[in-house]
Image 1 (tube, helix red, strand yellow):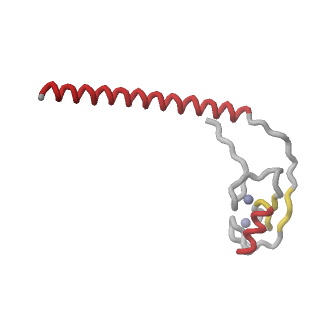
Image 2 (tube, rainbow, N blue to C red):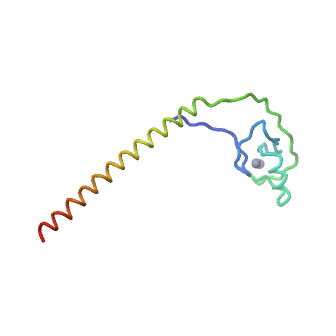
Image 3 (cartoon, rainbow, N blue to C red):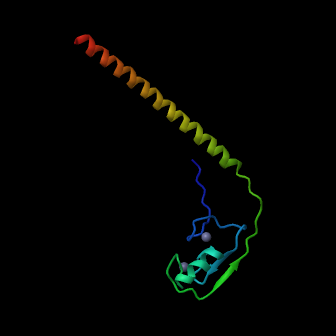
Length: 111
Ligand SMILES: [Zn+2]
Ligand SMILES: [Zn+2]
């Protein structure tokens, strides 16, 4: 199962990419500009390491359009394997129902 790691913002947990302004603190932690701005109104410390923030610099990413064909294939595989699990459970439920029917009919037969 492939696993992807993407940088995110510690404050809002959303991705860091070229679509929103991103800043780096003097302790080298990276956040959304707006998130850190809002956060620093309540605390002057870094949300990640609690260091005093002496400077904040804007980061400029070079970005390119990204289509995740690999990851859509991964999602389709996940859907297929989940479907199989559901079908297996459905079969189990059917077997249990049959057993329950069988038990109740033998009980009636015995009574
Ligand atoms: Zn954020
Ligand atoms: Zn920090």
